[in-house]
Length: 43
Image (tube, rainbow, N blue to C red; front, top):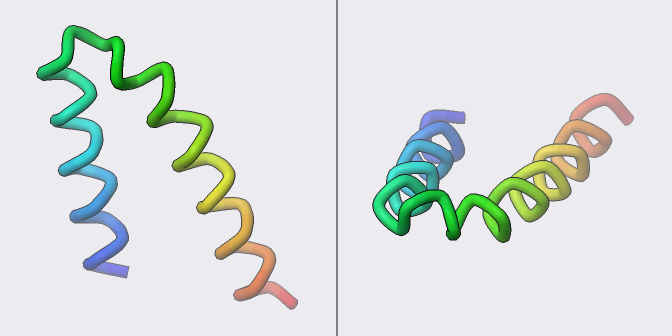
């Protein structure tokens, strides 16, 4: 979990450094990956 949180912070920082253009690609990918990991943990 700590690795996942660090990855989100790192990618979020990259998105901020690119003047929020990176966020357009980052948010859907992170949301999709988080949804898949949640489904694996619950199931």
